[in-house]
Length: 446
Image 1 (tube, rainbow, N blue to C red):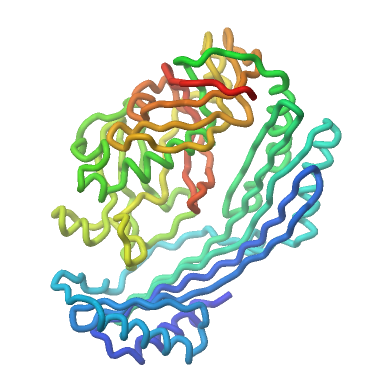
Image 2 (cartoon, rainbow, N blue to C red):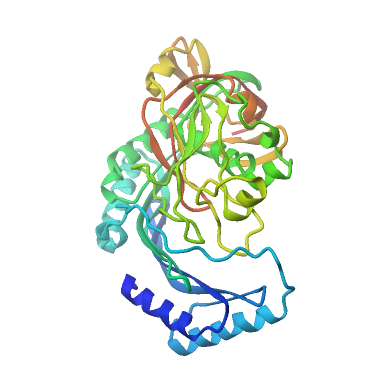
């Protein structure tokens, strides 16, 4: 693991050797260890680690890029020369933004050595607990337990230096029977937030209760969506709906909705790296400090995330959401945080005469960004609610629903927050929801 001083030394070596007008360096280092298991036995141990440096130079109104994961002084000079050489073959641009001046950043406390580096024997023991309980219930356990750390650092020839390190831990558990399954996952930068007994008991309970599911006709139902299911929907809202480049180019639903009410007044959403459950970094990928952005306030679309380029084009101030260059996606909200409500999941169930509890959604895709229409499947736990109680398991449905419609039908939001890992990396802070009139378009045979 490289220290801040070692990274600064690498940056100085590159910058002092560069004859570009401006030089920017992005350092990335990670280590991740995963233990996979299935059929109640460990099947694979995998460890990955890498470090890389990306050099971006601006010379004579041209930009050049080059990257390496060999961080010897000789390799860094070769990579710098490749960046300088590549700049000679680019067109001159009059609108290149100058590099960012030195900034001040808030400190984050999301790195724990005991989480980044876990003894393999301890991981095996934690997996054995799940496998043993699965055997006791005549179930098959499968999943993975991963942990590690990531370092992001940025420096440039104007004297800017930014550094952040965070740890990660993910415990993912599936249980299966011949016609039922259950699933639970917890993720955090702190291993002590991974509640193993809760994960195991929940996965087993859902599996046992999912045996012999009944057929229901597709249609519109009142649903109670778990935090994991909500996280699946918010992924598409964040990256297809709150994509500011799409908004500017009028290619998604929100392009003309700033300042308007778009969702139920029960819903508020921020982009906030500093939330205690989040695992965000305090700066963006050009070194500007990240700012908290109010995306939705009581249903009203309030603000957009901005990088320097779009902020200038839109006549607004950047708020620290640049992605690594070259970037064709525009700025994105990477640290979604949803406001909580005033009901527990259990109270939502008790308040429902007839509806469905959805443990998980998967295989979700966007059909129409202009209407925010999504389709996907339920998985690992779908249950009928009758007279305030879960009564029967149900065979899985396909849903086809507009997020605009769904998030205008919110009856209640859970009174606590959960950190959900997202498959793109990172994660969101979310809560479960009760939504009426949610559309299931077809059913399955399992």
